Image 1 (tube, rainbow, N blue to C red):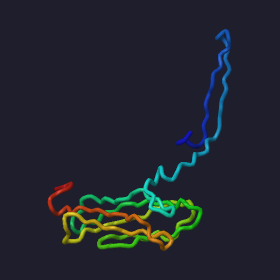
Image 2: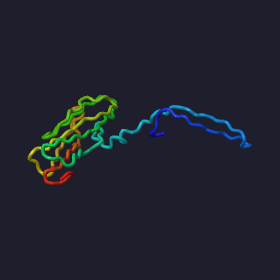
Image 3: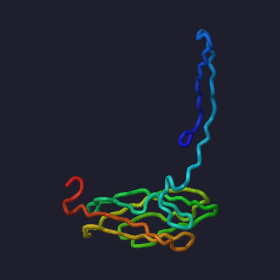
Image 4: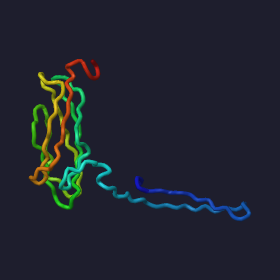
Length: 155
């Protein structure tokens, strides 16, 4: 089965021709998990074997001085070690570059954004991704809406 794994035990009851006698048979085993294509969990291919779960990190409404955090999941779909880093406008943005990623490994980085006291209605930051010190073609976009204008939850 595609999405099951682990031990199982099933009982089968076999009735005889006269429907008066029966035998019980148990089938037991261990299901090994199926290997899924990386694209099932990481739909965005940024190139050079790098896959991400998100192309845009939408933080939603954030009030001035407030900090919100999100997780960015990534995967190295190559058979070689990869070095991953993000470069760009980091005003209000905090994260730690993943650095070296083992072959076929997956990981998560926490990305937080603090809305400055003075900000426009929407903040859009573009982070350039580098795999093995080579720039990939797409950027990771960060979008944040200013909650000081009376919009969003709680206002």
